[in-house]
Image 1: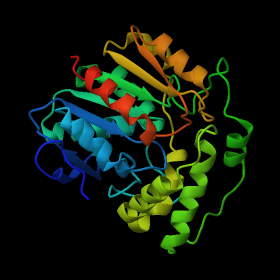
Image 2: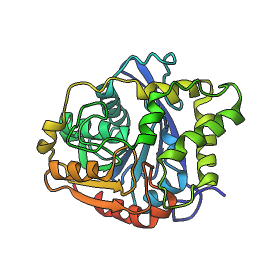
Image 3: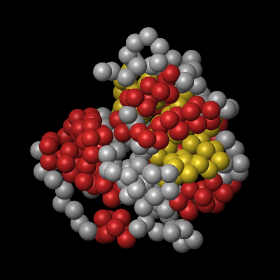
Length: 300
């Protein structure tokens, strides 16, 4: 069954190919362009389809125009050689601005998860006029590669994942790649709830099908990009109304990262997500998260 927009039929998706900054970016829009625009920025190793169609349909039903983008090296966007990304996080923020320009959108409500949360922060500090509201999920103050000695590090299990060289699967074997993507997400999920094997399998299949032959670059390169100059010290200058959502069981950026982020952005509201790890809004949170996002993005 196709997701609906809450009105009279399936949700209509429009695919875009946007040439900008020397690359081609793939984006998808849904909803009425006359409604407030919500820009969804995914995490490292993911692509735009990590934001499920049904989640998007709920936002569209709340009268939002939803934009999903594939950042460089992900999905249908320009891909560089595996292990050799040629850009940094500030470039991804510039790409997001270019997408808004292409679509003729002056301001968007920006929602970023993990690395997407870092890009969203950069948008708010470097391009404040383009950000109507800011929502940060599973994010840390500043860039994920900057040093924050005052905040707890990832768990030992997560740190071990990044310390061991992983050859990965046979990237030409779709079934093996899907299993690999499922397995690498397991340690990031909340331990208090059963791992959503079926949901993660569907997500992995979408990711593989969208990325095609560039799936190896998608899994590797976003974790190797430069973060650019420090910007945590600039968070106090953010003027966009800000919402911070953070999983109580986040093993990558433990909950104190969300607390610190909310404290450093004036007027930011912090909401703890119970039963959530370092995950992009699991389905069991949608009844809570979607109404909050609709309410928050009503601000300007």
